[in-house]
Image (tube, rainbow, N blue to C red; front, side):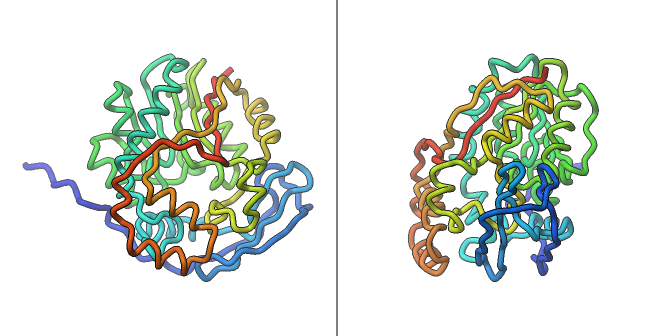
Length: 310
């Protein structure tokens, strides 16, 4: 039997109404907050505040699990263009996302003891494709059902569809776990850290990036900070994140400013996310050619970590 043709794009599902539920701090469970503020985003009123106990900036109320499922399965999340609820166009960023992946692999590879790799939140599988090309025995976990199928079919790697907070990982299995853009969307980051630690072999590596609440952009833009979107659960205080890593049994062997590649279009999208969506969307209707122009950047609000399991 001939193999089925690889789809040109994921088979997204319609976006349904988003629902929110009250929560306490996802890091320490406390309820005391300071500096509360609200932000209008795509027809929703988002509410954030800083935990007085651990310094974590978190959203309350936050999206329900069912709403997270519908948003990650939608075209509006990954390919929303002017109607986006997160990415303007994830798939059109393949060139710069794969170049970013190659740089990240080069940076964490010196600490990795073997070739078994798991990527969490693998999306369209661009990082998995580069990991496979670099000789890793790669697999992924992706919350979005359409993206998980797309990545598995296109790159020929196993991708489990589901939330990393619900998917079981076999103990002492992986030499490296990579999770890019994951930390801010976790509902229980301490439990996920423990899960990663258990799933890694002795001396295994966890490589990830995350936004810093202490960053210049976080302080400069406040409620207009572009990362404060509907699916953002929390953004860590630097000191709290380092404490959590130590408590989970990880030693930080490298912490550097995140160094992704990006197109001019992507950079402008981030910058213009701090102004009104009407201004941004009118501009983006005219500049798609800029997606072909790619350059390296040093992220002003994001850090890349390489951690080794003790």
